[in-house]
Image 1 (cartoon, rainbow, N blue to C red):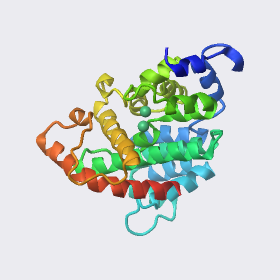
Image 2: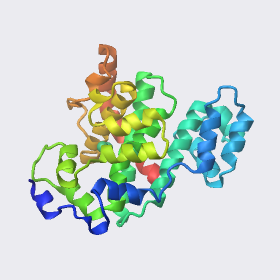
Image 3: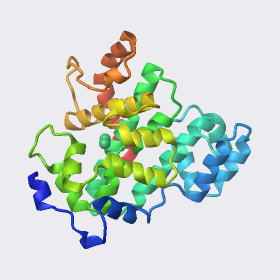
Image 4: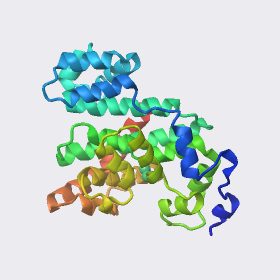
Length: 299
Ligand SMILES: [Fe+2]
Ligand SMILES: [Fe+2]
């Protein structure tokens, strides 16, 4: 048993059941996808749905409308003249990208509403999510992987379980995250030993309860073990690579240009030498750009 597990045994002081049940019970107070957003996502799945119908469904939620227009006009997605109406934004971005943006804005809403004890924890988790998302987008564009925004949402959301832990059991979350007794130990193993669950399992259970799409659930569940993702492995692999790069960028913001990439997840995506070479080329440049962009997004 690690020192952490001995210091912080789970007791039923906060209620009956396991820590996982306790966290999920607390998290039930936070709906991730508001009713209007859920309706818009449903309508958007119908290939015959018009831009006007889709935009009208989104407009029922004032906050969602503001967030979506803001995203459409942000440096991430803005192309040409600003989108001044939702119809403009939907037409410009396309339904698939809008779908991803709705889920991104819902993630932002959830992060705003979770009761973090310390602002710096919220900011660190938020920065890590955005950084991973920005790196996902760079990978998608550079390697022409064919995603339309879902890679950004997946990056933003991948560590949902860590946010749930930080908001509901903050002292245990901090203790696990700062536990350096076993350097190099897998974070999921550390969490399971100390908490009886891990952030992937918690995030997955929350995502299922909130009706998130299967692709995002797969990312939340498997981003530390992409080989376990039977389907949707390409999206999971992109996020796993980006997550690893984001951690590296956060720990070492200015990597040497000739530094050898040691990303263990590249092999899940690198079906050819061309892809691997492209990834090697973009790594050092991407680090600085991504960090600056992520910092701008959370500002
Ligand atoms: Fe994670
Ligand atoms: Fe992560």
